[in-house]
Image (cartoon, rainbow, N blue to C red; front, side, top):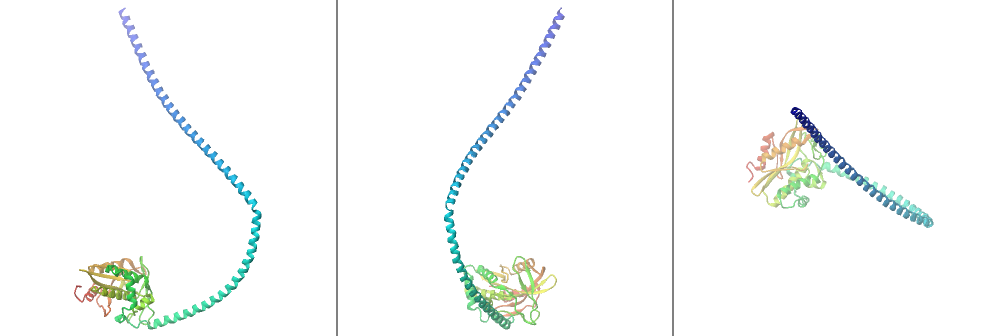
Length: 381
């Protein structure tokens, strides 16, 4: 009997546990359903909010459309008024057209008079053409005279005999500012390069071979020439200034006399020279060019300068050899002869305002000889 009681008790306990587990499972399921329902409610609220926002936007657009319709209606009203005004003025417009036709008749009369004036102008044009042809003939004659006279100073310092002229002095005074000496020297180089255009020498039979065209990277074009035999021909600096053109030696000689006049006037110790260069390209071709090389005393410092006024290149340094190497590197890097690079270059001719000398040495020895000539064999004071 007791055994049956225990069995029933156990069965009741098991049933209670099963009921408890089922209840817990039901509560868990109900909680899950509640959370899912909450999520759906939140999403539904979000959709309702979006719908309300869209509804507000539609309402705003409807209001804008109503405003636009009102504006269009107003414009149509204005247009109707304008059309009524235009219709009322058609008759006055017809009267104005009649007046214009009358004025056109007057214009026809004026055109007739202008035609007669044009014929007179055409005759004046013929007279001007005849005058221009006469001036061309005069210019050709002057050019022939210039070429005939040109070459009388075959590369000698005698071109400086009457220099600096008043023309040169006036040119220098207009260029320099009189404050910084080195800056003034650079400004002279720039001004000569800008105002004196490049033009080859007139042909001198037996002296000058045809020039070789040189392409300069980033700079303007000009010509280097090769003297076959005899001596170079120079213009005086005053001639170069008045003509407004010249070749490389004319540029260099003009710069030389300008610098000499300027530094002498400032009381600055100096020595400059026009230097003829022998330039050899990588194919072995030999060409000639002229630059200016010199030094001046700036306070307690001696500054060396290499200047190419033909293309406006201005370099300076307190050390002669570093300046020479810098210039040679520039030439080899930037200059080309018919797209052919430069192999080397060195001075062969030195021209000052009172002397001229040929250098027989080559390469670095020639640069040493140039330094000796510019310093009289000793360093500048």
